[in-house]
Length: 173
Image (cartoon, rainbow, N blue to C red):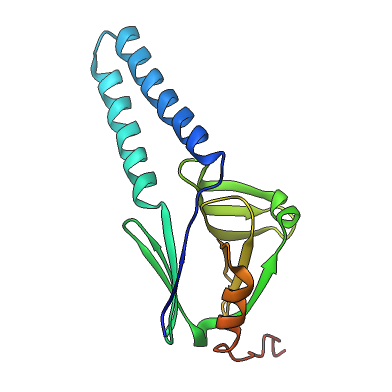
């Protein structure tokens, strides 16, 4: 049985996305006037377009859960987690996420996604969220953590919890 959890944007996401786009266009136009259309403004506009394209291709769209595992689908990339690779899944409160600092990530441009540094645990985490809240933490057997925003997180945790098996995470010395 396949279950699909669609990403729903938070109420601030359209506004912050518009601000990002206006800022990028404004800086590009400003550089075009300052450097009179020279190679520096062309280089900067090309760089901005490349960064925007990478950001747009990484926007999270939905989470698909089936008998094989969890698949986080973005516009151009998919992250797949098989159940045998998942060590644990749990609900995360919004206050726990306050200590996440974006390293290589987008904050507010059609969601929150990318690599973040959790300052509380000093770990790098992957976040795929359309809104900053209702998070589910998935930890794999290698210790990597994935945070997904999901409106039906209790349902997701229950569904995935039936498939994962407890792993021995203690180190042998």
